[in-house]
Image 1 (spheres, rainbow, N blue to C red):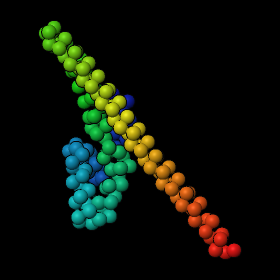
Image 2 (tube, rainbow, N blue to C red):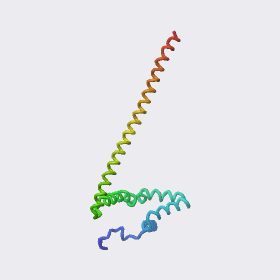
Image 3 (cartoon, helix red, strand yellow):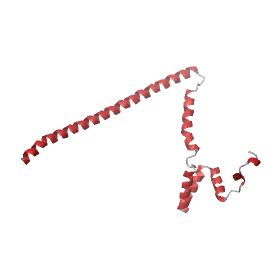
Length: 149
């Protein structure tokens, strides 16, 4: 961008709030958090205002938080599938990964069967208790009728 085409806001002088924001931005997220904590310590409305501004301007949840987990997963998946140049090792790695995936699938199937068995046992226990309660009420009902007659 040339000076002739620069936007109007770039040529205007910054106030002390703009300078403070630019300085905190240059120092990173830690500086924002430190300023907020100090604001709470010295005068709580300042800390609250900084917290609200950080959330509103999305400074608390910037790129560094969102980017790390997804890029790490992609990087590790790429590294795992990349060839090492050694054919014997690559064959061993492919076989080991396949076996680990099979073991993971069988373990997940086992856990599903275990959950199903637990659910069935709980349901059977509920039905037995319900049947016992119904039988007890049925046995107790004629006695009450005879007592009133």
